[in-house]
Image (cartoon, rainbow over all chains, first blue to last red):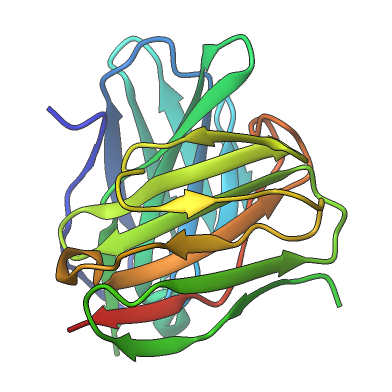
Length: 113
Length: 116
C-alpha cells in the first residue's frame, strides 16, 4: 500500500461548481500536511498547509481527519484557472536527524466552461 | 528574486555518460532535496540535505549521488546513467532543516532527462 494515495481523476468540473477530493495516508505518525498545485510540466507550488482544525484560504478549504487518516481539499466557485493537478504532501520525522516528505500521485482537476 | 535554479532544463544523452544536474538557491535555505517525477508514481525523493556536508537518502537513491559543499548548491550526479533514469527531476529548498509546519518547499523549474 502506498504511504499517500490520491484518486488520480480527472475530476471534470463545470465552471462555478464546487469540487472536493481526498488524500489518504497510511502512517499514523504523520505530522504535517500540505496541498500543492502543479500545472502541466511545471514545478509544484504550495497551495496551502492543512491544520488540525481545518483552514480556509479564499475559495479553498482544507480539512484533516486524523482518526480516518485523510485530508481533503474543497474548491468553491471553480475557475478555469483552477485546472491543475493537486498534490497531497505528508511529512513525518523518521529519526532524530531525519524526516520524510511523501507526495501523493496527484488528483487532476479540469474546470470547463 | 528568490528562486531555485536548475540546469540544464532539458538533456538527451546516452547510457553510461556521466552527467550532473546543478541546483542553486539564493534564499539561504538550509534544506535542499531532489525528486524525480514519473507518470503514475508521482514525486519521489532521491536525496536530501539538511545542511552543508549533511546528506541522506530518500526513497529512490540508487544510481544517484549528491554533494552539499556550500549552502546554496546541491548538484545531482548520475555517474553511469541508464534508461530507467529518464524522468522529470525537481530540486527544492526550504528554510527549515525539517520542512513541516508552515515551511513550504520552493521548487526549481524542473529538468527533463532522457537517457537513450
